[in-house]
Image (cartoon, rainbow, N blue to C red):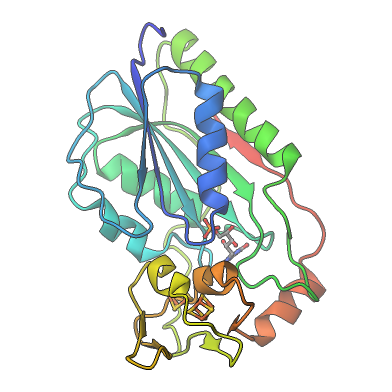
Amino acid sequence: MNSIINSVNLIYYSPTGTSRKIARAVGDGLKVNNLTESDITLDNNNIKSFPNDSLTVFVSPVYGGRIPSIFFERLGTLNGNGAMCVVVVVYGNRHYDDALLELKNEMTNRGFRVSAAASFIGEHSFSRENMPVAAGRPDFYDLGMAEHFGKEVMDRITTVPDFGDLFVPGNYPYKEVKPKQPAAPISTEDCCSCGLCVSSCPTHAISLDASGNVCTDIYKCTLCCACVKVCPQGARIFDTPFTKFLYDNFRERKNPEFYF
Ligand SMILES: Cc1cc2nc3c(=O)[nH]c(=O)nc-3n(C[C@H](O)[C@H](O)[C@H](O)COP(=O)(O)O)c2cc1C
Ligand code: SF4
Ligand code: SF4
């Protein structure tokens, strides 16, 4: 057992599952027996603080170059009380802009000591079969890098006596959050009313009516595309011109970055 860190907590928000994969791979690399997971995609975190000899790994997707506000809402009143943490963002091969800086600053303000940071690439939520954007990522290489990052974090925590203020790229004031247009994916006639989209929706924007029709609250929808990716019938569709824009401009493979 590590002499300083006795437990690890993975906390992630991950509608389409890429941040979850990265969180778990980082957790594998940390190699501690006492590891807990808190998936805040559908539920609020109900932990208020962690022990001083713990390390928390926060993993969030990037939305519009920022951390989605729901990530912080779901954390509730969680406070670090001087415990260590690592911040990780997962983005869809365009850019993470100010998201990593925002996550680092927020966790510092919540009383965590941020000891390392990283960015990884996940299949873009708007990626489609005919216009793939980072399709299949994180792949084998990415997951290996995430595990390596976890190992490096633990090695440094046990050998570096004092962490100064961590540099991560980004600007403050952060990139402006554009107001979301009221929109949501639609369900086609191939829908078999299985309800999987209902239970996968982080904002509870979807319901089935008495006839089995899918109803979506366009004001609650965050366009996360969890429902699109989970639908076994391929009946949940979100068409946006942004997919072509991403496909045309952000196909060149980007790679993970680590900051210590
Ligand atoms: C509303 C929205 C905004 C997004 N904005 C960005 C962005 O600014 N840059 C980027 O590279 N990817 C962006 N993405 C893609 C996600 O960051 C990426 O697909 C991520 O892997 C999703 O994480 P998850 O699988 O954990 O949900 C966006 C996705 C959504 C749904
Ligand atoms: S997951 Fe697909 S098939 Fe199932 S209810 Fe939703 S839209 Fe219909
Ligand atoms: S309805 Fe909107 S918020 Fe809910 S899962 Fe689908 S895209 Fe995400």
